[in-house]
Structures are given as C-alpha cells and as structure tokens.
Length: 272
Length: 336
Image 1 (spheres, chains in turn cyan, red):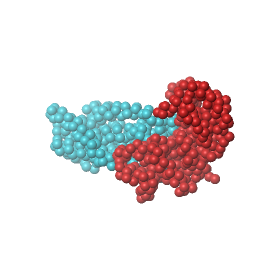
Image 2 (image 1 turned 30 degrees about the vertical axis):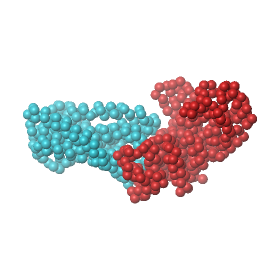
Image 3 (image 1 turned 135 degrees about the horizontal axis):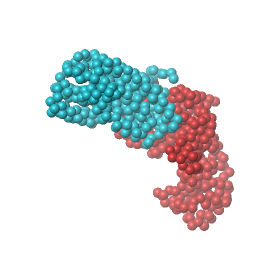
Image 4 (image 1 turned 120 degrees about the horizontal axis):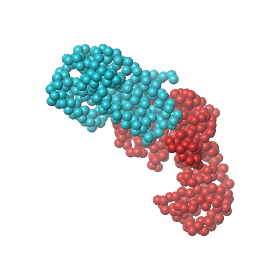
C-alpha cells in the first residue's frame, strides 16, 4: 500500500487532538487522575518512613507514583481503547478511512502521552515538594533518554495490546484488569526490582516500565546505582530494542487482526 | 455509462456460535446466509436504493462494499476497483453513514468532531472549516457548532454523524438507514440534503438502504428489493409500481386481531396478503393485493364471516411496499 504521508500525519494530529483537549476540558478528571494517585503514593511513603527505610526510598515511591500515571493510561486508554472505539461506533469509521491504522494508534499514543504527562508532572511536583525528595541526578541526558524510551516502549506495548484486543469484547476489559496490579508488583513501581530476584526481574523486563524505573532510580538518586538490577547503560540498550520490537509487532498484529475481523465479521460486531 | 458499484455473485455466510436447525432465514447447519449471489449495478450519478426488511442483507452488502467485511465468495467493485484486492484505493472514494449511530468523542465540540474526521481524509483545515460551515447551515446546526457532542440530543448526534460522512465529500456515499430513528423534521432535512448534494455534482453516487419505502420512492432513481440475502428485483420505483398496474390494492382496518390472520391470504382472488398490528391504536391493518377489483367482495364477506368489523376500507395506488408484498408475500413489518 502506498502511504499518503501527509494524510497520515494529519490523522495522527487529529486523533491526538482529542486527548490534548481532554487534558484540561474536564476539570473533574484532574481529581481522579492526580489526587487519588497522590494518596496511594503517600501511603507507600509513610510505610517506608514507619520502617525507617533509607531516604531514597521516598524518592523511589514518588518516581513510581509518577510513572504509574503512564501505566494506568497505557492500560485503560491504549490497550482497551479499540474495544471502546468499537462500542461507540468509531472503529468502523477509522477502518473505512484511507489511512494507515497505525496513524490512529500513534495519534492515540502521542495525545495520550501528553495527557498522562500533565498528570504525571503534577504528581511528581506535589509529591516531591510535600515529601522533600532529595534528587542527585548523575546524568541528565541519560535520564531524559530513559524517560523518553520508557514512554515510547510503554505506548508501543499499549499499541500492541490495542491491536490484540480489537476483536475482543469483555475479554479485553478483564485482560486489562488482570495486568494492572501484577505489573505494579513485578515492575517494582515502589521498590527496587532486584528485590524480586534476578529471574523474576529479567522476566518483568519485557514490560518497559521495569527497565525504565530501574534505570531512572540509578540515574536520579545518590545510592540508586547500588539498588540497580543491571547497569543503566544496558537497560537503555534493552529499552531501545523493546521500543522497536513493540512498534513493529503492533503494526503486524494490527494488520492480522483487521484481516481476521473482516473474515469473521467481528470487526464491527458489538456487545460481545 | 460508468458504473460506480458493481457486484458479481456476491455471497456472505456467517458462522453461528451454536448450530441451530435448518430454518427459513438461510440458517443452515450453524451458518447464516446473509447474502446470496447478489448482483447489482449502480451507475455513476445515480441515487440507488436497496430496500428490504431487517436482516435482508442490506447492511452486509454495504459493509462489503465499504471494505469492512470480506465476502465469502464473489466480487465487488467500487468505482471499478476490487474491494477485496485494493481496499485502500476504494477507501479514498467512499464514506458511509449508518443511521442510529453516533460518532466521535463526547468531550469534543460539533465543529472539532467534524474537523477531526475530515483530517482522516487529508482535507486542508481551511477547506474543512468551510465545508463544516456549509453543512452546519444547511442542516440547521449552526447554534450547536461549539456544543460538546456529549451534550447533544440523540437526534442531533445522529445528524452530526450524517454531516461527518459528507464533510470529506466522497465520490460514492453509502447511507445505511440514514433516517432511522430521526424525528420527522430532521429526517426531512436529511433527505433534502441528500438530494441537494447529488444535484451539485453529477459524478456523485449514493447507495441508500432503507426499510422506509416512501423514502426510497421519494429519493431513488432505481431501487433493488432484497430479501433473505437475495436481490429479487431492480428497477425504477415507477416501473416497479407499474408492474402492479393490473392489480388492485386495498387497505382494510379491523379491530386488533392477533390470531388466524393467515387464512385471509387463502380468500379467492387474493394474490398477496400482509398485515400489521397497530396495538397503540387497537387496530390491525390488512393489505390485500387482488387479482381484480371485484374480488374485494370475497374479502369483505370473509371478514364479516369471521366476525371482524371493518373500520375502514380504501383502495390505494400501488406503492413500493405493495411491490414488496407482491414479491415476497409479506409486509416489511410482519415476518410471517
């Protein structure tokens, strides 16, 4: 298929616009997407304080709470999104449009990154100020690279899930629910992942958040390197690989699921 | 004349989750035959109607032509392009509006929604906004341009979905029951717009599915009547109605009577018979297509003999619905 780049870029911008607008148009969303995560993050901070854990652990928790905003968004607004699009009638409109379906996913992802960042920044700033987190950044460029790669990898994973869940109804919903909390544990959102043991941490590294959080802990806190699972440089290289893997696989998964849906007549079938 | 749509022996079968017994609706060994050897030709510039009851195969045909569904066998061409082999080329020429459907996201305004969908077709923002202004004006939605679509009424959201289909100005438009569930005034606005849009450019083509026969009669250059996946007949509404010219069509209203309706079809001189219960009015409307007018006496005698009081009796000019009744032996609303 010859790709009309201009039209596809317009499609990416248009689809991302929905989420960029959504970031501020509904004030009530701020409450659920920022205040509630801050409360759950604070609970972990107080647990560590009660246990007299090293000061860095407060920073680990704030970092985990910040990145949690992205994980929740990837699950509910990326992975399950095509299911919702199908239910509300948008999916078939995307499917008859003369654009690559990847443009829709990229639009959802880029707009979603912006939306989640507004929440993440709020959680990060408020959490850091309230709990007086002491950062000791070792390399700002590397830290920034890890952050960006983690987001790209995460949203790439979200695009892959979105493709796979396109044909499913309630199974998609349950699948997302099943992923949410186990990944919070396995990726070490609120503690160094090496505490789970090498084998578990290695397995959990398929989720970009695991490597991203571990590398960010190493690069942003004084004693972070000691708590690292593997070196930050190796994690950066692995994140690059995961980004490429998820973006490429999601493209093929999307094409396969679309063909299957058209063959079985399930592409626009609702209320499954 | 160029063909906008052409199908060759198009078939589509759906697997059913649980195998059911062989039935009349093409339900055979766990398979549902939605479309059976459908052959249609729609000329460029034509407003073509596809008429049939619910489940006739109208939407299946449109979904195949709109590249949303693969046929089990057969070929479909849109503007001469194979919908299975080159779906991406077909998509540049088409759009689709399904009645009763909504589109977009509740958080966006009407204007933003239309702009967003226009971008999927690569339309320049300036051009898109000009078209949006025109559509808002013609379809009397100007005052809602800045309203979030989550706050629109159901009818207005359907109207928005209709505008969404036209904002990208396709060459071939598929309208699947576009006035379904709309109130009389909005449905009228929609029909007027379809006619105006067609007149503006002779290259534009519309395939309209509906089970409102009057709508098809009013709008369409030609219609095909489809039932149980088969295209039964295809001609202009005038010619189809002329085919019943030698026959007499009578409407009779009797008090609501649910049982034993089938026997009225056996009355001598009755060619076809259909009925519709109007529970809210406490009446049953009977439609008789008679071989000749004099057979009406047999009908009235039979009704009297049955103890049914005749509330009203009128002779009508044949309509497209009568053509449907004559072809399939039942009305659009009764599935007997």
